[in-house]
Image (cartoon, rainbow, N blue to C red; front, side, top):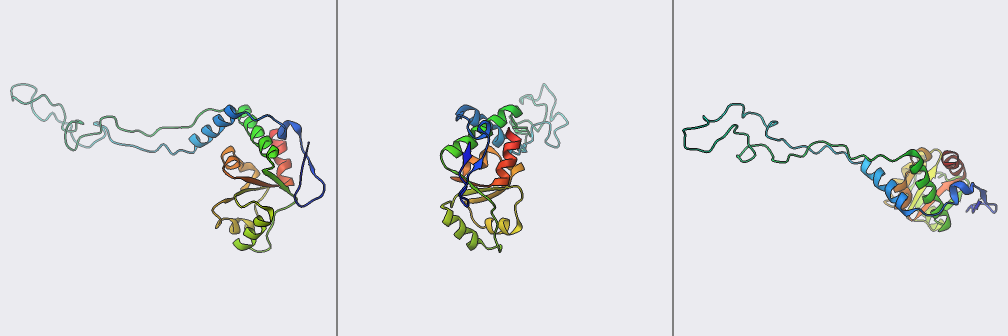
Length: 201
């Protein structure tokens, strides 16, 4: 299989097993859900009746006072008491087999290639860390909402891209399904494509 390169007349030969897969929507949905769930902090916490300070002593004896029975002044029914169903820290991460994750990534990359949303360049560098230079370069390529993938992100590119809200730079090791699907276009260097191919082959 051959992917068209923007800055070269010749194409880039890639594996059909990585860039020629069918679009598997349920698997991609599962991979995206698992990835986003793994990013949740899960640190929300409230105090239940045992976590609120005080309330160790029984406020009055069980019988004979004419008042309702009470074992602690920190009951959720009382003012300054604990929360009835208190939120506790939890782990939101979902299990997704590595084989399934790689299959989802292959499916996403294949669909991007079919839709001509995956653009390959020999290299993507900037002579200066200027946002306007990068914006002009992306406008020439017709890709304003874009994910730029390279083996290593140069400082000039990283500094220029961080002021553009619809531009994201990422190294091959950090490529994920959410980033690939979030942007309209993906610009990858030939070296990055080969690295991805090695990883997913």
